[in-house]
Length: 294
Length: 275
Image (cartoon, rainbow over all chains, first blue to last red):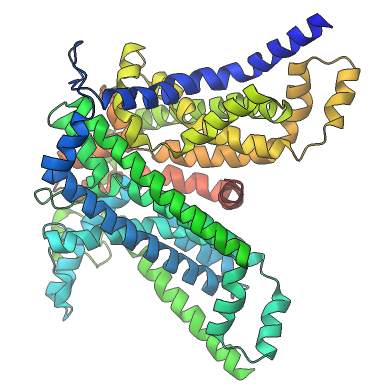
């Protein structure tokens, strides 16, 4: 009996070892390490460092206007992206769902940009922004197309949004399409007989039936938007100046290209983590309540 | 009834216009990749008068295409294979073993799914450096296993519950050990979720940019994405060359997509519903 229990333990650890060991090395330890470094003034190079407590956090909040700017910029981006990405994705999904024959074709076309990596998407669009649109503006009456898409701080925010949407909408659309498939046809028909118009049918029948897909898509878009990096890096590089610098880019530059302030940058990364945590928590708890109601 | 068909035509028309807009940048990239710089500046919209494959030949050499693709394949196959192997074992065992320790480990895996990569990247580079896995293709593959395993454990954990326990009990009576039972009976039954996990992780690893950027320094070890990034930095204004490189970078993905299209769609929906 004793040996059987022992073997059970052995088997438990043998099954878990590969995943847990590699997870500990590359995810758990770096997570804990980041939390620890955030309390130090470590520069990433020297062996020695001092423990500064919450000093880094105080400095970030008090005298780091660049970080604060990147924080506001990111929050603005998050709000706009979460709204637009879901509205567009749901809109496309509803339109495509109504087509029987061409469904597969449209699904493929709108999903295609998502297959292209974000950084490649950014390069592709920087061609469109710097070469194509100005030339169209020059040759036609669509003069408004000649904007400082990348060079003008006020416009480049929208360029970043456009590329992010172009790349990301298709993925959410697939999830919404799956959600829509679960809406029973007879409910729609009953609503038609009751005299509901298209808009009413969408708000009263479709939307409540797909709250689960909505929860997931909101979670994914919220998380993804906070972590935006590739598009900004590839399109504007955070510029002009630091006008389009998002949090992740600010952290990256602080740690790897400007100052090598690893401890300080770690503190910033903890702040990013807390923001994601709080926003996700709020989103999930609000949506859960909605799901119960319907 | 006539009103409904009119509405339906309108929806098709609207979708067609949106699809054209969405496809437009890809179309532009392709047609301009066949032009000379001069042709492009006279008109970006016009179709190329003659197909200039030189751009492709040059881009092919500059991004060292075969080598870059090889590196990307090694990293992706290693990452995806490792994740499926390790997470399958762990997810299965955790799901079948009730108890505090099991719950705690499972909680650790799930909780870490909320940690954004950017919050760990700094100390991850330190860990990689001290273990001497920084800068190597295999090291990069290993790191992807470590970063991807938590989500996969979560998905396997949920899926195992749909497999009846009686199956394992009967094989155990037949004298199979734990590992034999897993690899002979359970693992084949996990195939649907393994495909989902494989696809989601492949798309992520193949297209990932920041981690290779942090980890790789030797040009010969660059992944496809990283090589293209380097090219973009060096040949900033030579658009015909860059576009050819972008198209080349997108081709493997398009091939994979056309082969696995059905699974990719299912993978995304499955992964989302379970996640």
